[in-house]
Length: 361
Image 1: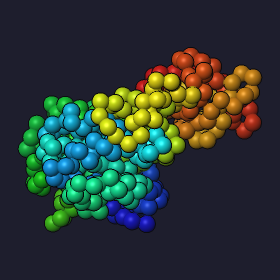
Image 2 (image 1 turned 90 degrees about the vertical axis):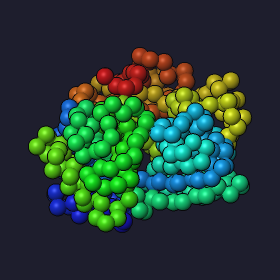
Image 3 (image 1 turned 60 degrees about the vertical axis):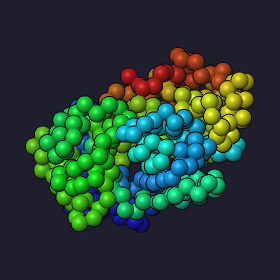
Image 4 (image 1 turned 180 degrees about the vertical axis):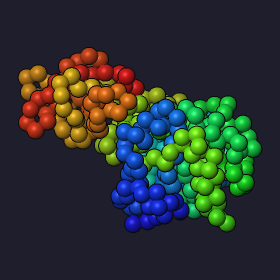
């Protein structure tokens, strides 16, 4: 297993550790419910240094991004970021990612899922026919997500730029806790606000930044948060997790990602996805909440009232903020309308649920 520059910090704090995407990662410290509440109500720090980062440079950098991603990256300018996905040649999803515009038309950073770093690198390289300069900086890049309604207020004294008024999906670069060239981005996967910070671990930068964050934040209730709460937080928002809710076999249109699929440009599988949009998809990713008692889990079958299988669960949990069980799953389009009654097969019993709109409430 690989370590991040913060692994020994997690162990010293008594984190419950486990393997995730080849890394030794903290799953929880004081408990998922406690950590979940800390982020929703105040602020918490996630080590997400296992994520992948690629730099794309040169006069054809934007052209390459446009050809391999579904969203329209020409719309973002310096200091803006964009959520997107890499469609495969059959219309499935290689990965979802964030595109950062460092210098318009010339320099971009792509942030990809940890488990897909090699796969994504090979996929993008395959289409790099115009000599775009590509650098995989994943191993030397640290990433901390400081999330929650009070995150930017707590961190502001450590930064030499105004991060409290940073618009969603924009970023700034500057000094952070005395460390140069730190990218602070108003992004994150919790739905509770906050920032993510990217920096290179050189000259002890990782320790310096971690220690500064907790020195200023601990008296204000800032807590370290594990991947367990990261999952419950994103699920309450209805955010997709690659490998669960979207993968190589699911199309962006089936997965509710039509909003990041722009047909105003040419990209991989454009024709397939255009046809899907015109004809309609046969299944859709929906959010649902349990009516009867039971917790839905990944791969549980979803059935109709007559007991016919109409889909399956991709993610499910007991939602800490909501006090009820929720999930995401693909169902036949005929059963995807809001308030449709569905049944989750839990230990051979159909447990009643209904289709609801995400974010869950």
